[in-house]
Amino acid sequence: MSTRYVSGAHLARLLGDVSRERPVYAALARSVRGLVQDGRLALRTRLPAERDLAAALGVSRTTVTAAYDRLRDEGYVESRQGAGSWTVLPPVRMSSAEPPGAAPGGRFGRAHPVPDDAGFIDLGCATPGAPAIFGEAVAAAVDELPRHSSGPGYEPAGLAGLRQVIADGYAARGVPTRPDQIVVTTGAQHAFTLLTQVLIEPGDAVMVERPTYPHALGALRRRGARLVPVGVNEGWDVELAAGAMRQAAVRTAYTIPDFQNPTGRLMPAADRAALVDAARRADAFLVADETFADLAHDLDAPREPPLASFDSGGRVVTIGSASKLMWGGLRIGWIRTTAPLARRLVLAREPFDMASPVLDQLIVQELLLRVEDVRAERAESLLRGRDALAGALRELLPGWEFRLPAGGMSLWARIGAPVATLVAEAAERRGVRVVAGPVFGVDGVLEDYVRLPYVLPPDTLRLAVERLALAHREVEAAPAARPLPAYV
Image (tube, rainbow, N blue to C red):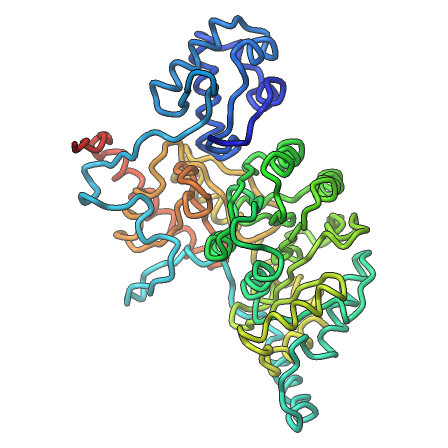
């Protein structure tokens, strides 16, 4: 049985005003079901007692009882005498379009080759090509390389010059940083995996956002962490996050505060301060993934302060990366933390890769010295792609819901029914790859969402949406889902 619970007052706040709809019990059941499906209410969360929720909502206890009964009938709530009621998902269903035994989600989200078809459109990867000044940066790095090639080439913490430039970047954003607080890694994924080895023991509770970056979930699962999801589809609910930290005895929390992947949301300053305070009270580390922090579409818009600017106790550990802003082929990332933890990380990386490539580090250093040029180019191309994708969706898939993010690289689109995996499969057959929502979650929810990156040219994005619209119509026209047969 879960140790997590939600109070009547808190659940009422998540539900909003359901008393205006009729019948009220059906509206209440539908709203709770929606919270479970989009991940804002975690599975195995104990629901408030009927009388407590009735008092918080201002409805009769009979109404709440009827709503809980409907949710039990639908498979979204289980109950046991003396233990209360808690959230679950219904039994697995499949449509006749799926082959028998097919696993929900299939192979989507896992690395596999793009079909050998020049017309195939891959929206599964959210990363652009290199910026215009890339060639100049490479030439400057090659000119610099002889200064380093006479030595062994192993710098486990990273090149001193690159660490200084990264530290200066944090200082410019209001977070004083020394080079000995920086560890250069072979990409952000390597950085996160290294942190899981140092900060997390098998069985530790780790709070994650839902949805979130799938490969972070993979690293945590391989480490044997116990995942504690908190929904962010409607933004960060810091009260719910703080409760999850406390109830589950969370030791580490992973968050993407800047243009969150995949939702594109930007965490407000007040929520950042509150989240750091919650981590302090829970005695937990807070790992902030800033991979998308430099990808605002409006460069004149005020930037939110880094999560680390609210930290005075060394609890916030920050991950940065060159792959999204600069180029995915530059496998260079970094970690900003306290100097003692940085030394532990340097020692811990030896079984992984010893050190990051010198030439790649020099190229990143050159690009960081001209980072404003790179940011300007990215902002222009991403804004153009975002608007083209949004325009095509509004025209060809008007029932899909999404919000325009102020930064990042993708739209998080709600398609109106829990068929995202089927849509992704149908889309692939029509020559476009998208990733269905469950890939970004912990436990099978988010089946009514897909992630749609806008890093490709506008004409290509429109063609992709045309194919998606055909795939969606195919799924809508398919026979209704049927329960899997029970075998005894």
